[in-house]
Image (cartoon, rainbow, N blue to C red; front, side):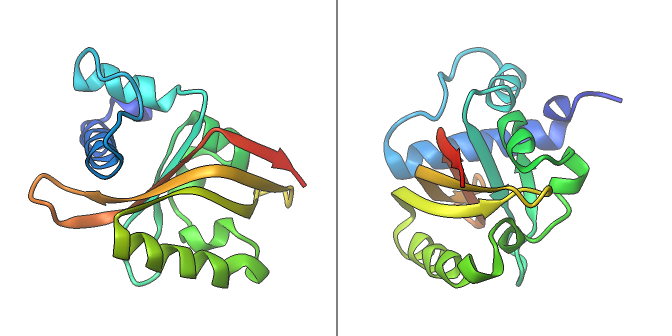
Length: 154
């Protein structure tokens, strides 16, 4: 079986993540050199976390790079099978819902801080996260994504 970042659907999704990030923030999430396949590998192995979800009524995670998988202590299959709201403790879910509404209205937000919870029960605080709307090639919203380079166990 191929590595997840080499799957055609993930390569396409990576391009959508990168293009949407540039669209909303005016900058690149990673250096955009090489082929889409190489960019997919670079994002997957980046030293910062990236996660995304879909547009379901209760959005389910559909991407997590290696840093995110390590932080949440999950396999790809585990992470991409859970509603994204479950990455926050119940007490923090209303704040997360407010954040998602703000992202939808403005396209992205920067400097987000929030408490998340790993599969082990370990809580960690994200700092300086960027959350953005992900669109496809036609501009249709297909989900939201977040990136974060700073986190601490709490």
